[in-house]
Length: 120
Image (cartoon, rainbow, N blue to C red; front, side, top):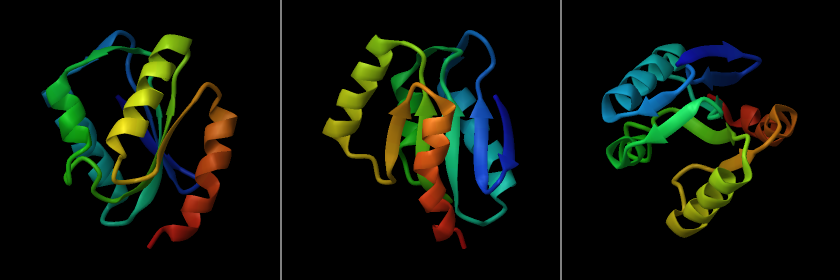
């Protein structure tokens, strides 16, 4: 995953055809924590290149370590069915930080804007 900090938001884009395993998830969180450097940030992650995700990886992302120093998460998807399934999952499982799916980056950035005021 490529990851960077821009305008108070940690951005992430998975490499093409990524299958998110537990090892991939741990590396992504490790990289995000280095960028955060002990500060809380909202995050914008582009999921368009993800080919699949293991349950163990998903569980790790939802864990205390996986959400450490996160204020909110916006996720970009490009097709209807994955977005629908993910939205159902978010409604049932109630993430510990605000999370939302978007089809367009501009809308995601607009949604994340108020969270930038909560950074320490």
